[in-house]
Structure formats: C-alpha cells, structure tokens
Amino acid sequence: MSTPRVAYVLRAFPRLSETFILQELLALRAQGIPVRVFALERVEGERMHPEAERLLPEVTFITPRERFQWTGPALVPAKQRPFADAGRRIGLELKAWGATHVHAHFAGFPATAAAFAARTAGIPYTFTAHAKDIFKDSLDWKWLNWLGSRAHAVVTVCDYNRRFLRRRMPGARVVRLYNGVDLRRWQPAASANGAANGAAPLVMTAGRFVPKKGFHILVEALGLLRDRGTRFRAILIGDGEDLARVRALARSLRLGGHVRFPGALTQPQVQRVMRQAALVALPCIVEKDGNQDALPTVLLEAAASGVPGVATRVAGVPEIIRDGVTGRVVAPGDAVAFADALADLLQAPRRRARMGVAARKRAESRFDQRRASLTLARLFAETSVSPRLTARLQESHRAHRPAVY
Image (cartoon, rainbow, N blue to C red; front, side):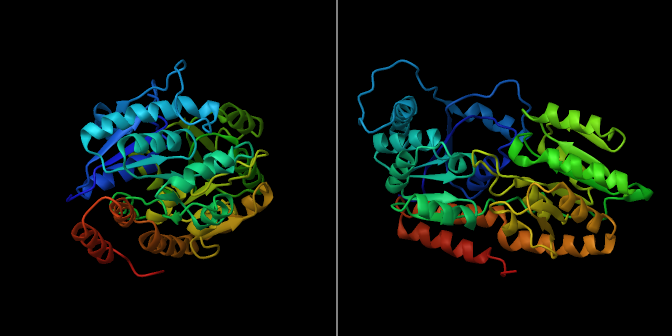
C-alpha cells in the first residue's frame, strides 16, 4: 500500500466556527493524502467559508437514526447507540472506498461513530479532543476512556489538555498536536499598528458568542477604558447564544460609538479586520460546568498575523501567548485586570510592534499548519502504509521543522 486513505467523521458540516478542521482537511489533501469527509449533520442557513462551500459537494452525510434495533455491544450507552449505528453504516462505505484510517474531531458522538466505522471496516481510528467535549462535568468518562483505550491515538490540541486527558484516560495513547494556521495566508500587514491615519487603535476579537469566551468581560473592560479616556475602537466578530446579552451590555454602558458587532464573518473578512488591528482580545473564562476554551483559533491567527494578544490564563492560552513577550495574559473573570492589560499595550505602539514580531516567530515555530499536517499524516501512516512512505513523511516533516523559539 503506497499511501493512506483517510476518512474524517465530523459532528456537523459546514460550521463557520470550525476553521481549524477545514484547514486541517485542506492541508492533508495538499500533502497528497486522499481524504473523504463524513458528517452526522448538515448545517443549514449558516454562512460558509469559500473553501467549505467548494468541499460541500464531496461530503457524505450519514444521519443517526432515531429508531432502530441495536444489535451491538451492551456496554454502549443508550445515547451513543444512534452514532455507533451511523458509524457502522459509514464503515460499509469505507470498505468500498478502501479507507485505511478513520479520524474524528471531538470526543463523544463523532468519536463513537469513528470507532464503529473503523470496527466495521477493520481499520484503526483516532480522534481529536478539543474543549467542550472533555471539560464539561457531566461527561461519561467511562465511555470516553473506552473509546480512547481502543483508539490508535487520542490527539489533543495543547499540553494542558494532554495532562488532563492522561489522568482521565489512563489506557489511551495521548498525543499533543497544536492546531496550525496557514502562515502564508495569515501574515503581518505592511503597517500593523491598528491606528492608521490618526484613528484610534483597533481592538478586535472573533469567535462564537458563548459564555466561555468571556465577551461580556471584554465589554466591561472596554467600558472602563472609555471612562479612563483611553482611545480605542473595537470590533467583536461572531454570532451565538450570548450575542444579544453582550450587545445589551454594550448599550447599557453607552459604548455604541466605540464598539461594533458585525456578526459572523468568513475567513477573508476576518483577515481584513485583523490587518487593521492593534490587538486581539479574548478574555476566556471557565463556566460553572467546567467548560472552557482550549486553544482559541483567533489567538493563533493573531500570532501568525503579527498582532499581540491580550487574553486570560485558561487551558492552552499561555501556550500561545508568552506574557510580556508576545502579548499579555491575566487571570480570568477580572474586567479591571483585563482593562489594565489592554491599556498597557494600547498606549505603547512600539511595544506592540515588538510583541507582534515575537508573536509571528512563535507562530512559525509552533503553529504552522503545514508542519501539523505532516505530523498528523505520519500518525495516520503508522499502521496503514509502507515503511517507504513513512520515511518520506518523516523526511518532509524534518525539512519543514522551524527552529524552537
């Protein structure tokens, strides 16, 4: 066998917020690896990234059935059985396609489907664990450990997650692989000061408006900056369940002249805003049920774009931002501390510029999408391809490994 043929199992497609999955798929294909995508749900009525729109006709949707007779292992929890059944149906397709490996994004339902697809097709599987799928207190860890212990590997996106999962999944092989960004696409602007033509410096953020992002903390901090007389503009990009609450808070603080909410945007649109930004701000918090962010994509994109980040000490965030070197990291949930960190950099353009250069170097050393895709390809190749191809992937990986920063 000369090359792996990899099937991806996703919870839903196309999701505007899951750019990290989309870019991973495209990067693997750029390595010459055939990738087929299966999704358990089709997202309707949501804006799509141009690449997702082009990929959509190739995606196979296998909808879990509500009513069917379960004939599989009794140990499978009832709520997981529709996804295990969907996985078995995917597995039949994989046999015909000649897949050599199955990979899922997110523990839980997609990992369950991948496990049973792999079982049906007689091939190995892996899955990537992110944040909401491992941090919520209500998760069934007995089942997740079962999935992890039978996987070829459990991939996760930061060292914080790796330590967490090694405690929770003692029988699993846990591999840390940072999400990457396309360093050719996300590049520093020619003049990345965020205050062109005498305008106030631009603070931006992007993400789903959910409680763990802490966008209400950001708005409170911006209100404090306005009251102190600090000059700024702010754009908060995204949509979600918390948007109405955050916008109402901004109105109550009379921030209409300072803050804009353009809604969800595509990657090219986000890039245009990023090129004008002085700072990217993300005050993540840990929710009451334990849910938290792991490795926020917007901070990776900011680093690649040479824009300093101001964020909070949650999960893998300190692995992206070196406090005082590539941005600022403060304690979560403290609007005053966050406002202080923003002010510290808004009033120091030369310091921002130095941090931006350092952030780009850090992105090149840790968050290169091409390097990440080569590592992932090697993982898929371990059980499914010839030593010759494995050696070629290893050689290519070494050629693209930047110096440690």
